[in-house]
Every structure is written in C-alpha cells, then in structure tokens.
Length: 165
Image 1 (cartoon, rainbow, N blue to C red):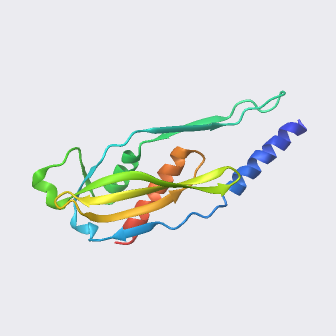
Image 2: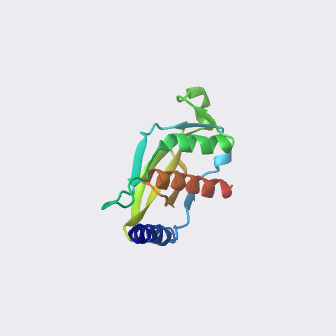
Image 3: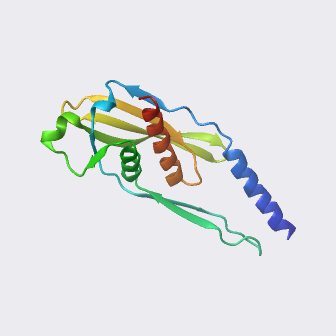
C-alpha cells in the first residue's frame, strides 16, 4: 500500500510542478481593424487525438488513461461566433469586402522542464478581397494532453485579439 502512495505522490508532484510554468503573453499584430468584417471563412483543419495514461506494475496502480481530441477549426469557429462573426462554409465573391479568411498553424513547442512542454499556435486573418494580412495572433497553451494545449492556445490567442478591440 505504501508503494501506491509513493507513486501517487510522485505523479501528483510532477503535475503540480509542470503546471507552474508561466505561459508567454499572446502576441497580437493588427494591420487593419477587424471590426470592419462581418463574415469569416475558416480553412479546414484535421482533428488531433492525444492521450495519456498511468499504468502500474507489481500489483499497484492499473489504469487511469484519458483520451481527448480537438479540431482547431471547430474551436476557432466557436470563438468567432461568440464574438459576432458569421461563419461561411465557402467564400462568396459578393461578400469578399467584409469576409476574413482564417488560417491556423502550430508555430512552436517550448520545453518547460520535467518532460513537459507548451504548444504555440498562430492564427491569421486575411482579407478575402485583397488577400492582405488584417491581423494575426499567437499564443501558447498548456494542458494535460496536446489536444488540451492546442485548445487552450487558440482560446488565449483569440481572447488576446478580441480584448484589444
């Protein structure tokens, strides 16, 4: 029984120490006001599934796995809808002057010690009419899995963008 307590204590310590890493502040670049746009077309992304688990040995701790998934375009869509944008399923030429093309990309990974890391994402907003960069936002995320990292990074990036209106 004391072996289970020791393993549990070590696992809890690792999670606590890993969660203490400060995330960098979101970086927002605004070349034009985003408020002049009403519609957004989000470039499709693929779903990412990640998992972690704790298994044991010699009669101690068996199980405790967790799987999460995220589709970045779904998270971006939800945040933009919450901020008043109408999401288009395809670009419509008659709306190009008030439509943004939204692109997502993972732009970095930073080690934070004890085997942990943050994932950085960058989101671009491009005018559908001129194809020029309207704005971009970059932020890091740190969660229990890579999917959680990405979800948190997207939300932090967009929160930083919409807080700067």
